[in-house]
Length: 448
Ligand SMILES: OC[C@@H]1[C@@H](O)[C@H](O)[C@@H](O)c2[nH]c(CCc3ccccc3)c[n+]21
Image 1 (cartoon, rainbow, N blue to C red):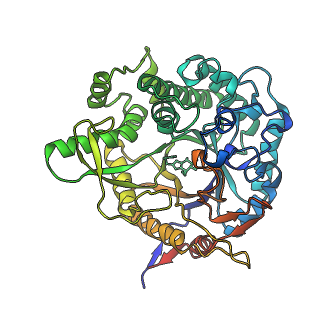
Image 2: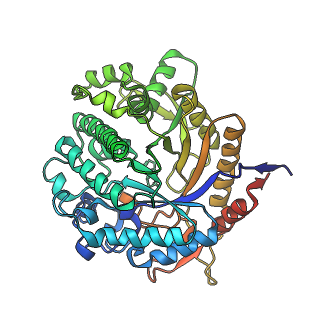
């Protein structure tokens, strides 16, 4: 048996998001978000599930913090709900909304756990969507105002800030594919939303710097490792387009201050132009202190005329699949973060999400023997160690997720938690994967 030892200062954490765990949708002045609207629209979410109750973390956050302490993490990534701070998106601050996050942050700090906070994890105030949402550049200013209020309220207490969670999901998944809120299916709209969100990210970073807020700020993109199935030029080009859709389209503006030209040309062919205004690219590529990467899966593709947006079809090569039908591809984590370092330099990296969904069963004695999920984590931890050994500046890892929670359009059937949420009683039951991660943290590494 070999012992894979992690650096002493490696950050182990778990991640959640406001709409997925809080519940209390109308409590203490919270305004509606686009996910309240979407989940309450028949046909949008499996079983008609909504985030009205979720894990009720709005009232049970102390139980969550106790679980985090038991797990032994040094950090906890969660998101602040904009509609709790500005119920109408702009205007009057809702102090009761801020108070909830003050309770959460103080409980975390009392437990010796660092909060890592995402400003935007998809719950846009509906009042802003009614005025065009992220397609309207006024939303950028509203976002910066929201960020400023939260920066000032928690300066010195929250020291790791993430502006956006997965702008690809906010733009393409939600406005081209249409699977997430607000559920549009327009490519130009998606390209515009992606651009405006990235400008909003940059403006928030500028505000953070100008206010002299303590700590570090970055953003999180979901990166997908997609490789050509053969070395044929058309397969290489097709797989690259498909990968760039998730990766370079967001990472190039963030770190190079420009969009990848081959993709600009491809979108132009499809009738979509990027609405760049003077100064936008400089704003987007404001220097950041780290990049958050959410990694779940990857695969292989080859050219197929007319297939999808990029004339690319996925080739099934025999990967094990999770309950989301996603390939289990741990090597993809090694490859994608090695690519980040090659393409964008030695920017510190945090894996801000990684995890898996399997069909869990709660036993009579409240255990969940989720061996597949524990194995998924083990395989990905091994790749994290391999990355660190290779010199990639990987600084931390946040497991998705602490709790089973509202899995967006899939509702509550899809469980990603290392803790089982009993939706009848809202009781939390650590799964075997929780104890596996607890031991890795305690030991500072794992035996392989
Ligand atoms: O699907 C599991 C998690 C979500 O619960 C998180 O809120 C979100 O940040 C997140 N991103 C991804 C990868 C991108 C993706 C999200 C949803 C559906 C398909 C792909 C997986 N996850």
